[in-house]
Amino acid sequence: MATERKTTVLSDTLVEGAKELMDAEGALLFLIDAEQGEILQAAFAGVSFEGGIPQGPLSKIGLFGLACQEKRPVLIENPGEHPLKGTTPSLQTPLRQVFSIPLVREARILGVLNLINQKEGRFSSEDQDFLSTLCVNAAVALDNARFLEEVEKRAATDSLTGLYNHREFQKRLGEETERASRYGKAFSLLMLDIDNFKVFNDTHGHPIGDAILKEIVKVIQKCIRNVDFPARYGGEEFSVILPETIGIHAAKVAERIRKAIDEGPFITPTGHRVHLSISIGVASFPEDGRRREELILSADQALYFAKKDGRNRVCRYCDTLKAAIEKDQNKLTELLRNPEIKTIRDLAAVIDAKSPYTRGHSEGVIEYALLLADALNLGEQEKQSLQLASLLHNIGIVSIPDSILNKPGPLSTEERKIIQAHPGLAQMLIKESHNLDSVLPAILYHHERYDGKGYPNGLKGEEIPFLARVLGVVEAYHAMISVRPYRPKMSHEEAVQELRKNAGTQFDPGVVKTFLEILDKRNPA
Image (cartoon, rainbow, N blue to C red):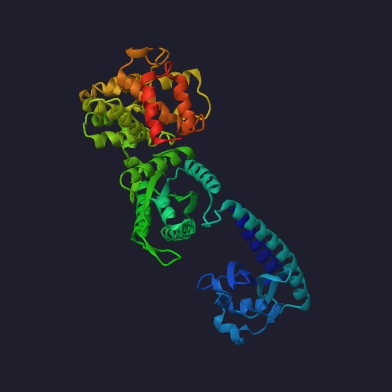
């Protein structure tokens, strides 16, 4: 983050400037957490560590932390004979002198600056006074930088898990997309969702659920690199940006995370052992999307199929049925010729996944359609046709651009014409699948209106096939009680009122009457 770079720049400037001003061979700065006794950050100029930069407790820096312990400047003329020599990190430059000054702000020790070996002679009292004044000013600047860093960190992180939040994820994904485009790099995006976590929260309570979320985050962090960017996307859903990682390698990372969580178990604060699993969708730049929004949608759709396929799965977008259909329209024809209901249901899931607003729409329409079929005493063949029509009624939208389907504002005249063409597109797709002949009329005409003002052919009243009239009512009801990009969802009562209002104009009044009787039984006042 920019604030972290600012702290680094201040630290580097301080050690470089102090080294030059004091004509020293080297300078070391350690920023610390005095309360925890931990090293937070190190900067150095003119020297280097033989065994790597020290991390952890202050005891790891020996002589270089002495001024923190004594809370005053310390000049050590014979470092090799000092009792702390054994715990002092080895430098490639032999130690002859160490002048150590604490950085203090309002009685808080922020760090310690060490000057190593003045090139000529020894550090004078004037040198010591000058460096002490320099460190007072440096402490103010570094403390202000830390404060700003903490403020920005809080604004960018999720308060529960400590991961970056949704807003920061969107920002970072946009930056990564631009970088990858500019330099021709690949990268991947993981979307992760804990399986059945709502049930877990309902069973164990949200406080325990929050504790488990933190444990899951720890597992995710152990499975990824320092350069990767994990974030809380929302609720029990997370995202991870994997820079310079192609799809096949991203899938391996995702599988490592999935396996680590599946192998649990997790221990609740009350001591219960619980098993959890996670589903993960994988999308990669540039093959699955070249814009931020496209990558999110692709990864989200891959996640959707991972959950549809039984959960506790990793699914790459390029392996989904939707991706296969987009690449080869003949795949769609092949699937339509397969009479297996599971294949048709998978295909319906593909259609619903065209837009995040229509997920589960086909399955919801089926539920109401079969209830209405029973109330209307339809025969078994008609019921099966209605079920298939409910699954496939939106099949024509596979050829409609996502930008139109997900447009938040009103459609233009041209865009509306494209949408209204989807029944005709459905006819073109289905006509070669002879096993679906009985289904086609319901799909083709379910947007006709009882008053003749519908589409595609302006059929009126009983000219409209009966199953199309049935499908038209249940599809409209389910759409009304669902969120759409152009409007909020209606309540059950509002949708019922809309059906009553349009019975005899948009809808078959007899079908509406029977359907409302069913809804009254399911939703008693």
